[in-house]
Image 1 (cartoon, one colour):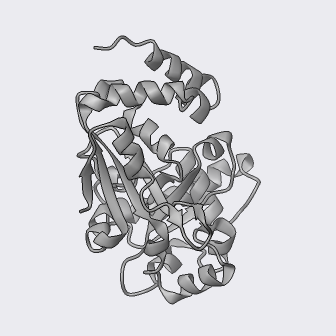
Image 2 (tube, rainbow, N blue to C red):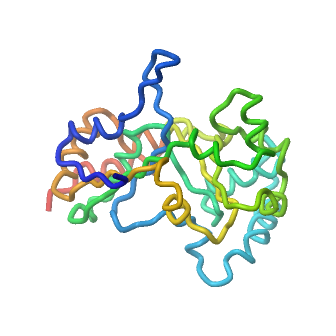
Amino acid sequence: MNEIRINSWNELQDQLFEDSWNAHLGRFRSRYAFRGLSNVDYGLETTLIRQRGMYAAIERHLLRNFKKYAHRDVVEGDSFWHWLSVAQHFGLPTRLLDWTYSPFVAMHFATANIEKFDIDGVIWAVNYVKAHQLLPESLAGPLAREGANVFTVEMLSEEVNSFEELDQLGQDDFVLFFEPPSMEDRIVNQYAFFSIMSDPQKTLDLWLLEHPEIWRRIVIPAGLKWEIRDKLDQANITERVLFPGLDGLSQWLKRHYSPKG
């Protein structure tokens, strides 16, 4: 069953850490990417898709002009994947989706918006190891030779260096997960990484329906959100930590001192 509706804090922990035992290592090492959303009806749409209209046609223009105007502020790397990561991080519409290795960070994003506490939330969990078993050989091979489960921008740059090259890989749609450079504390603190679809016009949730063995959705009832939120605050999983800086501090204080409506 791909959708699980939990009824308690403890049940949520059990579901989030299910399948995390790695017998080969003798350790608990989850292979899931997590994404928390405040509304159970939200899909896995990228910011590029949310542009609507002829969004796929403007993808290259967005990144090209971002590079042109932002170049003086970005000097750490000049690869296609580095620029795409920076653009996503600073709000440019892209075909990337944000994920986290941390179930608790995903819980935060599912419960951060107190204006949606009357709506069920959801946490998506996708097994990125199994997702990568469906990659075309030109990508699966280098990942296997490296002995890695997730790509880095350096690994991807050796194989793909443009949207055109990505679009031409394989006959079937695929998704890959990669870790961005640790360009800011927010990426580090959120234990963040990205997914990207080979087809910019296909949402990841539609692709996942074709592969039910690699994912699940954990539904958080609206009535449980306050308990989860309070316990996360007690555990220091807050905007103050996940968004270092005065804006994150302000977001945390505003939410923390808001009355329970």
